Length: 329
Image (cartoon, helix red, strand yellow):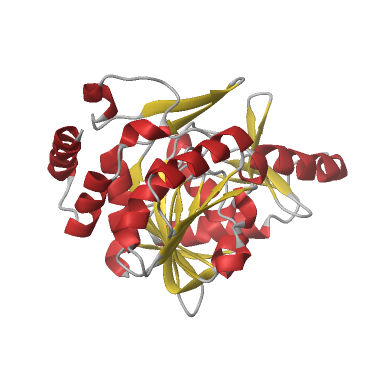
């Protein structure tokens, strides 16, 4: 299968200028042992997503290799690093990263599904890898035991970024994660960097991943619960904020800035502790929506720049601090 792995690396190389450590790692790991399904070599070693296991109605996949190479590159992955992977599935990507970070490094893969987790243990054991650890748990909480990490790499579409990851990340460490913006069915991946002053995020690429389960996939429900507790306090709207940007762009920006959106019966809501707004070609507000107005003001300063060209600023709890354009940073 070595020839097939070399063919895969050539395909990955066509997609970007990746570090030799990353390309060599894909040469070392046989992709087929991570799948319970049998595929022809030209399928296993194509630069495509493949389904690797099924548990009742739940599937896990091995992500597109060139996209994983891009994530590793954007994270600045290199030998000696300690990596936390969220949504490790049957373990292929974690084992590739184990070769990138080498014997002095460590990869910790967290997978919520028990069956997929057990498959990853089998595969890592078959490869005799000693620098990769798999954990069966809800990835929202990270894994404190081996913190701090240089990198958190997320391979499922999450609805929010966990403050636990920030707490377990070194200063100047990076999180690369696809964010599931459920109100517009979009999954932009961002690079979140922890600085001495907070967290900074920039758009990386548009993606399509399996949606996360557990606490990383229940944000809509959580925000609906918050909405149900406060909406009966208001009868009439207090203000209407019209924005020049499209609904698609607006809802993307507001999701990533605030983690406060939810959908119900065709309406999109923005929920705060004691106020809310709903989208009607603009924000119809109920109560004093301080956070929403702060985001509107910050976005207006950027001249309503597209989400792909914005820099998002947060504190360590992932609360919104500000927006700016890439070319102003």
